[in-house]
Amino acid sequence: MSKTSNPYQDDRGNKDRSITKDGGGGLELPKSTGKARPAPGGPFLAAENMTGGYGGADILHDCTLTVEKGQIAVIVGPNGAGKSTAMKAVFGMLNLRAGQVRLDGEDISGLSPQDRVARGMGFVPQVNNVFPSMSVEENLEMGAFLRRDDFRRTMEQVYDLFPILKDKRRQAAGELSGGQRQQVAVGRALMTQPKLLMLDEPTAGVSPIVMDELFDRIIEVARTGISILMVEQNARQALEIADRGYVLVQGANRYTDTGEALLANPDVRRTFLGG
Amino acid sequence: MDFLNAIVALLNFVIIPATAYGAQLALGALGVTLIYGILRFSNFAHGDTMAFGTGMVILVTWLFQSWGLHFGPLPTALLALPFGIAITAALVLATDKAVYRFYRRQKAAPVILVIVSMGVMFVMNGVTRFVIGVDEIRFDDGARFLINAGDFKKATGLAEGLAFRSSQALTIVTAVVVVAALFWFLNRTRTGKSMRAYSDNEDLALLSGINPERVVTVTWIIASGLAVIAGTLYGLDKSFKAFNYFQLLLPIFASAIVGGLGSPLGAIAGGFLIAFSEVGFTYAWKKVATYVLPESLAPDGLVQLLSTDYKFAVSFAILIVVLLFKPTGLFKGKSV
Image (tube, rainbow over all chains, first blue to last red; front, side):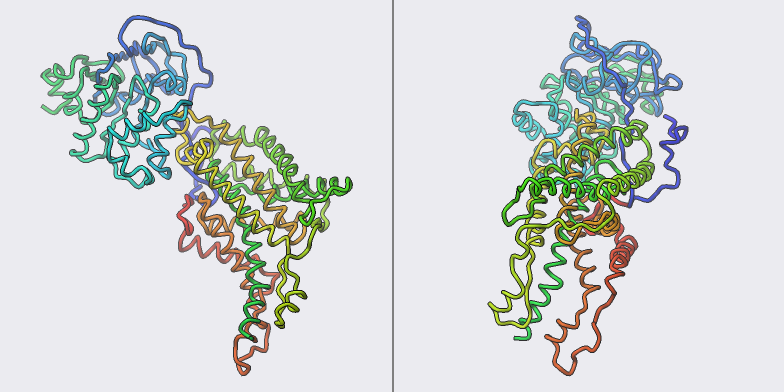
C-alpha cells in the first residue's frame, strides 16, 4: 500500500495535532458487494486457492485454509509469510484474483467484510482492536451494532467467559492491561454470535501467563461450537491447541496437518519451531 | 454594606456577562470539538456557519414578526431557531456532499481538510454578507430584563444596581439544556455511541457494521445545530454582525483547545475559562476595588488590565500558554 504516491494523502511535515487528528481509517474496502450464492458440501469454512494482494504483486499464491465446525485452525509461519494477509483475504479485506471463500454452505467470495460479519464471521485485528475511550460494556455493545434483537444474554455469556471484564465493565477499554484489552477485543467479536471467529495474533505483547489463559479461553469458545481461525507467532503453544495447522511460506501452503502431527514433524520442528 | 455593593457590582459587570458569554463560547467550541473528534480536522468555517445560521434565524424572525407572531416575553428568534437550524444543516450537508466528501473518498490527509474548510469559510462568509448584509442588526424582542437595575436599587436600597437581561438568562438556560441533551445523546443512544466509536477507531467501527456516512451526516447536523444556537444566543445577547462572528472563531478555538480538542467536557470548561479571563482582564476593577478596599487604598486609575479592544489578545495568550505547557488541554483531548 504505497501511500506517498497519492498527493491527497501526503501528510509530510504535518505534525500539528492541534488542527488535525490522526488515526483515520486506513481500511480500503472493496467498493461494491456481491451476493452470496449457495454452495453446499465441503468443510465449514473453505478458503480455497486464494491468490491476490493489495494491488501490486500477489502476496498469496494458491493458498488454501479450511476449518471444520467447532475446531481450531492455526496459521503459523515465518515473518512476512502472508499469515495475516491470508486471514484478511478470508475476511474480504483483500481483492482476490482467484479462489473462493465458502462459509457454512454459501459462497461468500463477493461479499464485503461488513456483510461477512452479518453472515457469521467475527474478526479480531491484531492492533487497534478496541475503542479505547469507551467503556468495556460500550465496546461490547458496539460489537453487537448490527444486531437489532436483545443482546444482553450474549453479553452475559461474554462476561461468564471473561469474568474480569464484568468487574471492569464501566472502565475505559484504553485503561486496561494488554491481556484484558485482548479479552475485550475477543468479547466484542463474540457479540455478533459469530460462527467463525478469526484472531490475528491474539497473544501479541502479552505475558506468558496471560497467553496460556487466553489460549484456555479460546478452547472454551471453540467448545461452544464456534470455529476458530487464528494467526499465531507463538507457534509451538498454538499448535498444541490446534485441530488443524497451516504452515505458510511466502504466501503458499508449505505444510498442512493436525497440530499434533506438525509438532511431531521433524522438518517443521527444525525450520519453524527451533528444533 | 460596601461589601454587598462590591458583590453586586461584581455580579453585574463580571459574573453574569462572563457566564452568558462563556455559555455561548462553550456551545461554539462543542461544535468545533465534535467535528475535530469525528471528522478529524479543525473546521475553520464554524464561525461563518454561526453567522449564516444566525442570519437565517433573523430572516425567519422578521417573517414571523411581519405575521404578527410573537413568543410572549421570550424573543421571537427562539421560534425561528428550529427553521434556522434546518436551513443551515441543509447548507452544511450540501457542502459536505459537494466538497468534503470528495476529500474523504480520497482519504485525504486531515490537514488538507483544514485548508478546504478555510475555502468553505470564505464562501460562507460571502454568502452570509450577500444575504443579510454587513450592518449591525439587533433582533431581540420580548421582555428586556429579568431584573432591572433601577428596580433592584429600589428594592434593596443598595447604591449598585443589578441588571439581569432576559437574553443572558435565556443563554444560560438554553446552554444547560443543549449540553445535557448532547451528553445524553452521545453517551446513551445507539447513534451517539456509534459516533464515539467512529471517533475512537474508524476501522473497527467499520468492521462492527457502523455506517461512516451516517455518522458523518449526524455529526454535521449536530454541529450545525450547535453553531446556530450559539450564534443566535450571541446575537440576542449582543448584536448580529457578520464580521464579529468571523472574529469569534479565535476565542472558540481557544476554548476548544484549552479544554482539550475532542473532549466535549473540555470544550465547556474552556469556554467558561476563556470568557471569564477575557472579561476579567478587560473589566475596569476600580468600582469593585473602591467598595472593598479601605479609603486610603482606593485606586486612582481604572484598574483595567487591558483595553476591551485587546480582548482577543487574552484568548491568544491563553492559547499559547496552554499549547506550550499542557498541549493536550485541561481534559486530555486528542490534540498533539
